[in-house]
Amino acid sequence: MSVTSKDLESPKIRIVKAEIKSNINSEKTVNLTPADVVEYREHMFRDSVEVLMVISDTGNSLDGKSLSEGLPLTTTEDFELEIQDIKERKLKMNLNVNKVTPFLQTTQRENILLTLTSEEFIRNEQYSSQVNKRYNGKISTTVKEILKDNLKSKVKDENIEDTANNFNFIGNKRKAFYTIRWLSKKSVPSEDGKLGDSAGFMFYQTSSPEGLQYNFKSIDSLFAQKPKRKYAFTGIPIAEVEKYDAIVIKFSSNLNLTANKKLRSGAFNTKLIIFDPFNCFYQTIEQKSEETEGGTTSAGKNLPVLNEKFVQESTRTTYMIRDTGTIPTGDVKQQVEKNEEQSFEVEKILNQSIRRFNQFECSSMEIVIPTDFDLHIGDTVEIDPKSLRNKSNGEIDKIAGGKYLIFALTHKISENKGSTTLGLIRDSMGRKVEGNSSMME
Image (cartoon, rainbow, N blue to C red; front, side):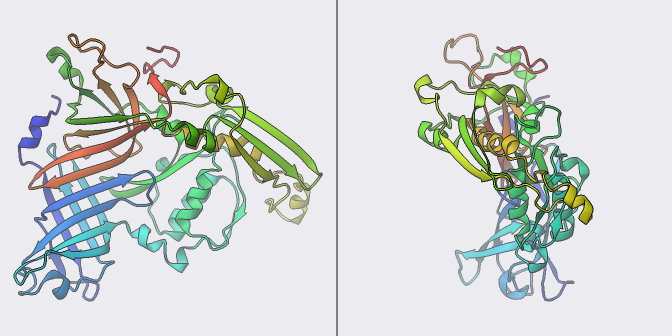
């Protein structure tokens, strides 16, 4: 049975646990249920999940003292949160208080907004989390090591996708999150044929039944996933409703293409100028997006087609000194033998990554659906908006419809009712038929 907007009318969503622990006395905990408003947020371009919680404090929980006075509340407190949706799916996580914002204070009541983040988000600011040593080998292995050793995070192998390429470097006291995002731009998927055609990984945090987890996934693998949910929006015949997981409550669509900005960023045509001081080699490489389109995995049918007079030449030039013989692996003899090896294959990775990241958000949607705690950023969903061409038979829009990637997610809960807002993007246009990449609508 599919979930519809009627489910929002029933107060079935509840905060199971919201418990904060004092920094001064670890045995002193306060139960903050029920909270007035809770917002749980995930975003692909942020280093941590975020929870906003509004607490209406009357001083009854701490012997007549307010929470900020009696705990006392000073930030970084441990916080356990568990929320259950209308299908008894749970969000369960350990967080820390990052910010305390009092508002609407009276002599009898104090309202407080707590901003909660992951432990790793705060730990990233510590000196012990800085990336100092030398790293060798696969980038994916390095990412796991930084998460475990520097950020003290629990890492599952399946959440860190293997990279095809190695990269040796010295940390130079960079922050852990900065280093991982820097490495994501140098990473190539391990699938055969990707080197030279596609590059670029995404790093983001989600929740799971076991708690919070970090993910390191290639852009291609994210768009290659099968849709986790299928939604319809307006005008769907009654007989067709059961084919969908839910009906969209609110819907807005946007073509995220500003021509001059996309051209400036190098989303389509790029030029790479390489100089090798080892042998004074100089090379210019110009490449168009369609030359590597067959080697990438996209969510839609094709990249947008631009006016020919604007795509005949490159619109972004990158200059790079070839990194030859720098910090090779092995003993002294082995390092000497590898003195002509490249540490980073710039002509096969750099501009491919630039184009892929700038194609990432070609078109976008924002939809509101009934609360669904099984969805996370990094999942894909399928959207069927009704076409405007025929108002009588519920024909589907084949350009705006299709598969999208969730890059932003917000669960909002108030008075035991809730909704989920999904920010959706994809790298291409038009509907691709699932199950057979050669078949297009």
